[in-house]
Amino acid sequence: MFGLTVLWMFRLSYNTWRRGLFNLQDEDYRWAIVRKQMHPFLFQVVNFVFIAIIQNIILFLLGVPTHTATFQQPTHLSTSDYILGTLAIIDLACEFTADNQQYSFQTYKQSGVHEKNDWPGARIAWTPEDAKRGFVTRGLWAWSRHPNFFCEQSFWAIITLFPILAPESPQLPAHPFENPTALWPLVPAIVLCSLFFASTRFSESISASKYPEYKAYQQRVSMFVPFLTPVWGLWLQLLGRKEEVDAQVFAKGDKKIE
Picture 1 (spheres, rainbow, N blue to C red):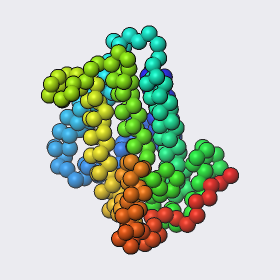
Picture 2: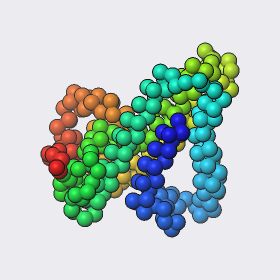
Picture 3: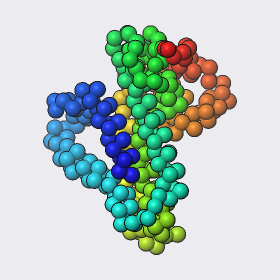
């Protein structure tokens, strides 16, 4: 679990560094919008209560699964450890790829030039149509509107399962009200997913106001779970709107740069 968390940390730090977000003068673009929409006093309340207190509590809670696993004292790695470890590595690789595709797209959008040093998986031949649309809809982003967020939530769900599925796992109650404290290891992942859902809804409201085709993208591609995207496509096909929506959402061609 420690090794996987370190890999997660390096991925996040690298993506933050290359975007220039370690500059203490920068902030998430959404906060500037929230600040404009709220009364200054109310924003300071939110700033103190949520950003300074609640957000740090949530980050602290992410350590609960590791804390639980520490007291299990396993003698060896179990089958569940190997399976979950493999899934976590695959998940981090997908998240890294999604980050790289987004970064590659934004670089092309700003400069109009393909970056020859893109990471494997992000060497997509972006087109002027992609840049004009304003948001990425290719690669992993053709399957999920937020593949990086989906992977982030999945990673912490996987971490949560390590102590729960271990041979020394705490016995979860058959009914949640039977022994609520036994459900404590599930709290971090649930809280994190709730936060991601709320913040993503807000982010998408901003995107929908900026980009005319974003609402079509919402109709065509699942917010998080990529397996639902074919279902949305089938539904649009039944409504006779799939070709129209696809024309708005997806650029022509999907050839990668070699």
